[in-house]
Length: 128
Image 1 (cartoon, one colour):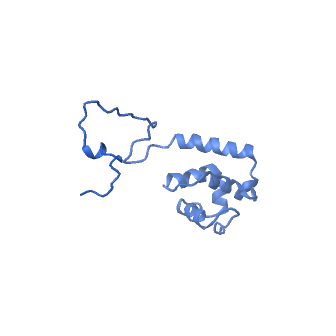
Image 2 (image 1 turned 120 degrees about the vertical axis):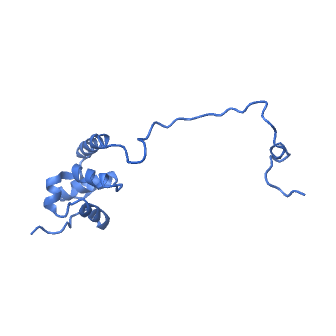
Image 3 (image 1 turned 135 degrees about the vertical axis):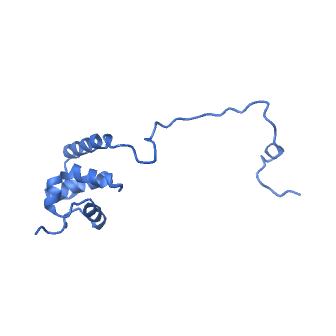
């Protein structure tokens, strides 16, 4: 029988997420690999950070996640970004569009609301 998932870099929260996506042992994690494991967690609706991706790699290499070489981190991020791009948009919500800035210009013939024109800018002082 395979041992429960108890690996370096994998804390209780990450271990719980991994169990919930069917990765219960080191062998399960080795078979999936760090990117697929990360994507399973993400697809399940959790919000893993890139640190989890590095932690998974470190767990498999038996090193601290900060010791994962920069070149390998870049490979992992690139693979994860490619996989994320293939995900369908969230259900019930449209895919995010680029953020735009809308500027509203006031018309010069707009009605005046006295309290804005009062001395002091209508700051909410005492009124009679």
